[in-house]
Image (tube, rainbow, N blue to C red; front, side, top):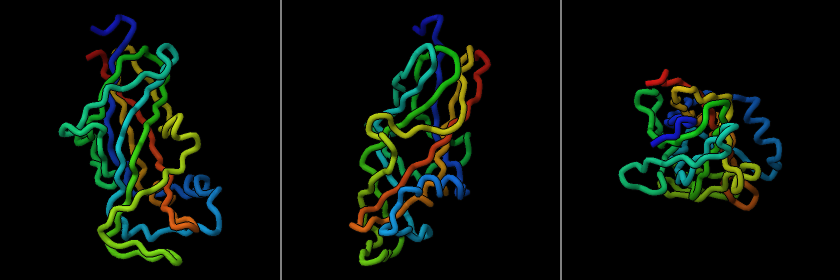
Length: 200
């Protein structure tokens, strides 16, 4: 039973679309060296991650761990971030958590990121073969410790709230690059928005 001081927050995930924020991409790629080169985004077929944890923070609860809802029995939840639904009515349910109302922040933890291509890709002296999965490195400052922080303000209402996490597909793809050693890197960009349950 939920404590009288706590309310339930449900979290879901959708794609934010293929729009690209040039300012965001430039900022994220500020530390990319000249030895790193971008990949032709039109040939990216899949961008897969394991979602291992989601944390939600409110002033009264601190960082609370969301009880994830595994898809088809998978644990952790495996997601192809390029195949997410774009309509909120089709959003992927991630789970729920009981917290105190108030301003909130969300962070996600990803593992085992991989990418595949629709056709062969050559970047400098490196060639990536169509249909093969290639491991990636997610370039997130302190990401192992503090996760990927969803941008935007959100609030948990006294009647409970639904939080929608939007994966910024286009902006994230704009950060994909290949290092001078042949490693594929990217910086995932997430946003969060709130809708109130209105006490329902």
